[in-house]
Image 1: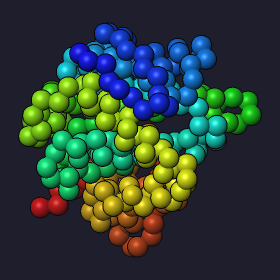
Image 2: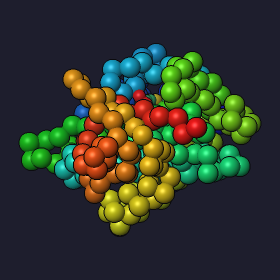
Image 3: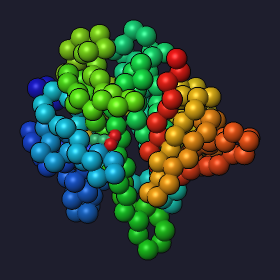
Image 4: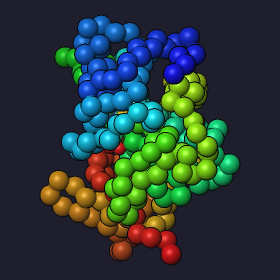
Length: 254
Ligand code: BTN
């Protein structure tokens, strides 16, 4: 596998196999790794998904975690998941003819034709001062294979969507380039500009959505995200509620 050429702000830690690139990013961050360190592995033996799920991680797909030190409060740092989702969408647009089919699903999935092709896992550590000390932004992109997860939003991979064989090295190279651009946009324009871009590509706007919380679930029309990135759901009577976290599924549009 060729080594990707990354923009100057990144340093690569390349591994054949690791438990989880997020776990390695955490170890390196705790040992003082600089902002812009990227951990990239060909395979993970204990890949992690959100909510304690396993992320299937055989060779062929992209598994990478960015160590970032944004120097801001956790609320702002969480906005980087939207930045990353847009960067993944930009990456996929390079390889797929129909970029309209690529959408960002709240809070941090990327879908092609409604099928999940990428997931993002953000882990942070905050110091006593209330500023994020380090953040591990883990990104998995299905390039050549995907697990059979079924459900309302089944999985897919880039090759199955007609992009041909894309190797993880060139995918990471392009992801780093796109992430650098989107991060600059965030630094200069704040979350307002990221939110605007994200809403242009949001999956399920105006559709009925169900959100599952720890002990409850709610349904309503998906109205987008607010200024903090929270999901906006409008109930039948017109009342709106915002949700900062949760598991979302959408009714079929047909
Ligand atoms: C999700 O959709 O549940 C998030 C999946 C995140 C997977 C990536 S793969 C690279 C990084 N290392 C991990 O262990 N997880 C993330």
